[in-house]
Each structure stands twice: as C-alpha cells, then as structure tokens.
Amino acid sequence: MPFLHGHLVDHLTQQPLAAKVHVLDEGGRPAFPAEAIRKVGTGLSGFYADGEFLVEVPSGLTTVLVERGTEYEPYERSICVGVGAPTDAMIHLRRWTNLPDLGWYPGNTHIHYDEHEDRPDDRLRLDPRVHDLHVTVVSILQRQALPYAVNRYPVGLLTDFSSAHHIVDCGGETRHNRAPWEIGYGHVLFLRIAEQVLPISRGVLVSGTDPDYPPLCYACDEARRQGGVTIWCHNGAGMEAPVAAALGKLDAFNLFDPYWMWPEEYTIWYHLLNCGIQLPASTGSDWYICSNNRVYVQTGDTFASSGQLGGTCFQWSGRWLSGIPLWQYVRRVADSVGSTRRWLASSARLWQPAGFILSTHFCSHQPGLAQCRLPA
Image (tube, rainbow, N blue to C red; front, side, top):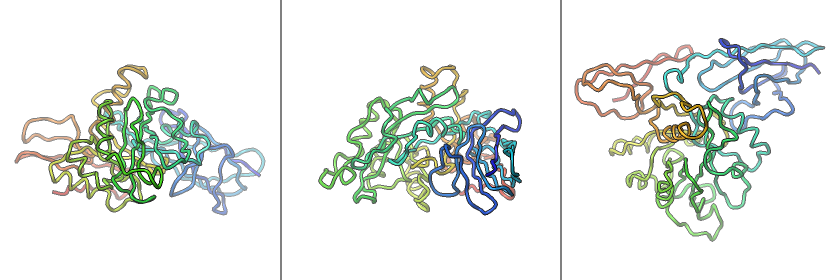
C-alpha cells in the first residue's frame, strides 16, 4: 500500500514543528502511523507528529488536517497519493498571531493520564510542543486502586520533560464525591507543592467505608503552607466551593474544564465576582489534552529569563501559575483616570471610576469573527 510522508514546518522560519495530525483516506477512514502517539478524547481522531510523519494510505485523494495550538492556522488539504514511492507533502503552518511576542504565555493547568495510557513519558514530552503550551501541569489523583499513568510522576518541576521554552510541572488533585460519579465537596488542584497533600481522595473515591473527611479547605491550608497554588476545578462544582472562596482558600478558578460541564462554566464564578470575591480564571482540559483549552498570562518578562530550568525560571513559572490570566486584565495599563487602556478579551468585572475609557482590540484567523461583546 502507498505511503504519505508529511513534513511539518513553520511557514516563516522553515523550522520543523510538532503538531496534531488527522488523516482520512479517500474512503473517509482515519489512518495512523503504527508507532504514533494518538490523540485521546472527543472530536476528530488524530495522532502526534514531531516534525514529520509517514502513514500508509490507499492511493487516491487523502485529506490531511494539521493543528498546533491556537496561534497557528489549521492546515487542511486534499493530497493525491500515488503508487510506488512515498508521496512527500510539505506542510507549512502559518502563525496568525504571536502572543508570546507581546508577553503573553499559554498554559494548561489541569491534565491527567488514565490507567489505559501505556506511553505516558512519550506523550508528556510531546504534549507541550504539539499543543504549543509554555506551561503544562499534570496532576496525581486517586479513584480507589486504579493505576493512573500520571501517578508515576513526583510532585514538583519535572526536569526531564521541561526545557528553556516549556515548563512541565506535576501537582495533585484532591477530591470528594458523594457518589462514584457525582461531585460532593468538590475537586481542587494543588500546584507548585513540595509534597503530596494527603489524603488525595476521601469517601467513595477511596472505598465504600472511607470517611467523608477532612474537608477540602483543610487540604487547601496544607497546600498553602507548602507555598502551593490552589485552583478550584470544574467551574465551581461542589458544595464546598463557595465556602473555600469566601474564606480566601483559593488562588484561582478553573473555567470550562472539562467540556462536559457546559453551560455552567461561568455561572458560579460570576456569582463570586458579584459578591466581591475576585478570583483569577484558569483552565485545563482534565483528561488528556482533548481540547485547546488554555489560559494566557502576561508576565512582563521573557519566558525563561534565567536561561536555565532552576532558579529564576521555576520561580517565574510559579508566578505564572498564580498569575493574572488573559480573561481578567492586562497589566501594562496607564493609571490615570480617563486614559485609554489596552485590554485583551476581558471577561472579569471591571471596577473603574466614572470617565474611564476602554479601548478593545479583537482579531481572529476565522472569517466572519470580528466582534467583541463587553456586557455591562
């Protein structure tokens, strides 16, 4: 059977890129390289490619869709694959915006690999580059004795997977359910911790006789004692979420993680904002990277100013994890009343004196998307 040999490069630099690839043969059947890491989750099937891929397909028209994060235009073409030698295809990925050049860096703060993942190291090495993430956080969790693949990693900075351009960290998700698949007290992420906060789970997530104790607020206190960052998961689901927020136990609030929580993703967060509890927004994809969920943060500095993994660079990533997301506000603004200020996609409530002038800018590579809504 013929082969399609794809080469993935940046349109401007001509440097190889890692990306997510979806291949359909002429009959509409997906095709995968035998040894490729496959995308897990909803939506189109696909696989990870690190600069190139070689996939066996029948001769004829083959459809190729390539995606890399949110700052590159999706590439979709039909390629005629002939018989004989592999058909070579140069796939140029065009960057439609470059937010890191403006000081904005993307991250995903909520990722797990389940018990079926048999190549977690290979996936974790590729995830940040395939999805164009500067900060990637996986977290340990517990459901009875299930051997989740992500639980093999120690908490803290994972130096074997990090680089000057990608920080990979391992945290923990402490949880309580009232029933096996029904959230009780809630779920909360602990990032930048020195050691795992115990118990990881309580109640039915451990066993049918395990006590529903301690409360998650106690666990938040322990994470804070270690200098960790606390992020409530799943759009505020869980009876303890408003209590933890009101008591000041939280550093951020994960919105739209995961996708199946819609349409409640913003409701609880807006209620908290209306009560004067201003929590930065964060986000993640939960089980694997099954979506382009990400949060952007402006640091006012380059990503790895120290040029090394330790020291300043990791301290910087800690500031990022507890930083100010794209959805709340841009730091580089003028302070005088009545001046024009730059904001990016703000969805937090703005407390400003009368006479404040707000200037917005909206752009997209998608045709027809050219408006920005700012509810009062």
